[in-house]
Image (cartoon, rainbow, N blue to C red):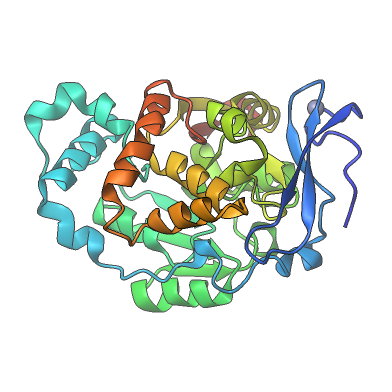
Length: 340
Ligand SMILES: [Zn+2]
């Protein structure tokens, strides 16, 4: 374990201790969240080495969920799916026939509510999903019309699933372990990856190398600068120490992308109230109060009886979503032409 003594983004040594946060899956150890007084970046300390980190990823880690694949196709003709398709057509250029024309003027509004974000459509384009887990996101993109899809996954069981069940070309391991020819991809997606990688700058450089000129990097991650973080403080769900080594906000993410040769094209705070519920649940989970434990069980996603309670608890989350203050962010960044 390495004690963090300087800021990863700006290199300064003025670090402030914010909170001590317990590890929540295995319920062992606790880690500090440090805040850089100069650039505002937040980091987990001490930082485990790559070998030490593997201990904190149990085999059933949530990223490796083994979902039944064909849900997206089955639901395709539902009205809600057609609304989503309208967003994909008008906001991201997808050639989908099943959409609702009269919703077009409101497509931007519905875009805020999407759970999964697609890149802009590239006909015959090649896309790599880093951290593809069991390949669910690639399945989703296939239903939207992408043909040349690749994955990269550190968990060999999940990678095997994506390969065998869905037929994707999946590398097992981490990005710089494999030789990928330069300028191979039109798009690289990385959902909830950057906060996990030991060296985000090295990761971004490798992504830039394998992207074609003007290629797109699409990422989603927790937003440590959100109002949700301010409210929940050390109880915020997405500190997820020590698996999350870095805690980006819009400012620090923009800075590192710019310094590594990317230009931000779009930036979203998804209006997904599940984030809020996750934090409420996480707060209840960490409490020792019996009523809190009861409420925690009621908020289980599989519990139907708790729908009114969920609705009540969702209300503040809905307000935060309108104020664009929820705890996740999505960024579309392009390789700057002159940086290739
Ligand atoms: Zn700093």
